[in-house]
Length: 157
Picture 1: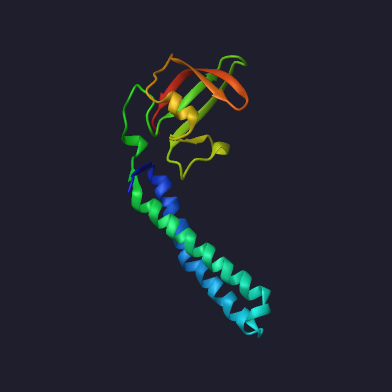
Picture 2: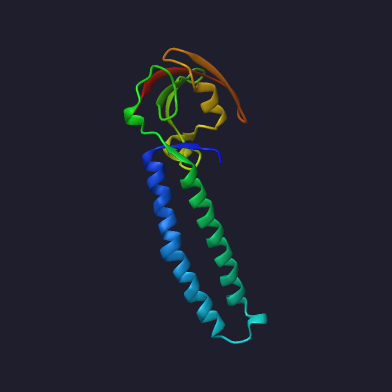
């Protein structure tokens, strides 16, 4: 079983999601199955089949979340001190060509969310940034073309 880095916040969210699936979604699904059964012939009962499909999805999600939690290695960015980009770092970058800054935090794959500036440690951009220091320039090839970034700041929040 391979271990995966995760922030304390990421682990908390996975545990909350697991709790929701186990104690809200699964219980609601059991009631949905009971209601569908009451409608009669199960062979042609679309509600019953949909509820049973949902039951399988819920079981798979529970298993996925339990596995992710079991493999989590929690790393608190606030306890880290480094002059290099590492897991948990919040990095401010300058996109050289358009002179625009952007900030990302490198997090575990289950907690990444580009909309809020959290990129997975496994993301191609993270892989290019890890090990670099303030002032370094990196070239990143993305689907939108080649971009050059200068690292302006590294923080651990």
